[in-house]
Length: 419
Ligand SMILES: [Zn+2]
Image (cartoon, rainbow, N blue to C red):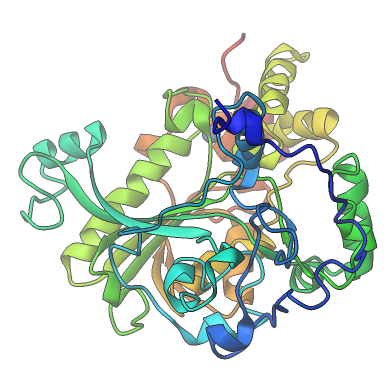
């Protein structure tokens, strides 16, 4: 009994909001953007050892809260140390010049996938954990089988198998924010950003305002999953064709097939383009970002759906953005300024086919120094009937389109289903 986790839960509370003599000698500084991992220093976010921590927040993103529950109910030993045997990346990736450019990457740890290897000489007490994991998988998507049956997609036996399985390399990435860099991207002072992050999270992380010596923050938000189709080595090679879709999470459409938006059909079209590009000797990348409902969250999103469909005159393209703004105060909170980091982590300098119509994504990617050769809109036949409201409103607001943009009068005529 004395060995049970619940018996070993510590009641001793150590405030990390002030130095208090802690962390002054054994804390390793993080020199963001340094040329080598040893100069940069490890990100140490484990709560097991307070004296070594050199960041604000902890690892696991939003799942750190579930970890707390598991400790609270006694199922997880708070002293558990991860056994990382055989967890190294299934496919080597990087390093690329962008990994040591403090401007190119500010919202993830470029060394996060190899933390266990490049910082392997550190004593075990330092509890250095990866913030990125890279593995391989076979995925099977019903629409792709239909594409094969119709002849739009060809089975090659290596990338797309006879049984419809698609061979992918995938990476899960937790956010690691270098606050001076994030502040610069948003064009605010670092101190201003830190104060507002503290206030708007209900004071969740006092170190944001009391520990100016800590510049790295692990926010409790969702991360990004990258799916690479084709030869991983060609992704960073500008002489090889590359297709990219940066897709923001939409659970209702992506998983459950809701017809109010174009998310799943566009995602599948992106995967199709990635397969075709990989089959001609290049590669395709899907970056799937956990920014549900334009980062407003699903509750707000469903409230907006109700407001759109119940408004006078029904759900119309001319009132599409206004209804979101009424409920959320803004049209969008995705902040695409941080999004290109994942592309720079992959070493991408040129995208031959960007499968996106979003002007915000295009501007963020090209402003970050990545060349975009061609933008690929969603084919009209893939747009669900109820999603015409969304797509016409977006095109009229500046989204890339190859066909006609409707006027205000025309937008008022594009209507969706009633509740
Ligand atoms: Zn959607």
